[in-house]
Length: 130
Image (cartoon, rainbow, N blue to C red; front, side, top):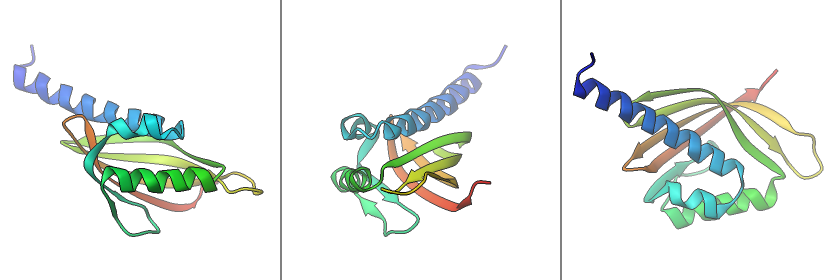
């Protein structure tokens, strides 16, 4: 029978994975109201092509801009790995700009989570998926 510490560690890992997956699902709804509760007040977001954005309101403003200017922008996690409060997601990123076809990119996201919130998110995209 596993000891209490082991069970607690496993529970923490599962909780952190589920938090990251739920956040990505909320992001895919494109609803700021569904995304906001996942973010800590001092969240840091580092998109691949821009400077780091800090603070829930500033990050939500970035997301609003994305949703207003990009027809499709969603994350499809394929592999999620957890180590402590760090979550790594290997994902396909589906993107469509107005008037263009949908593109799929390979992406990696790293999240730092804690106390039921996403505390930081760094998003990297690579070449298109073939």
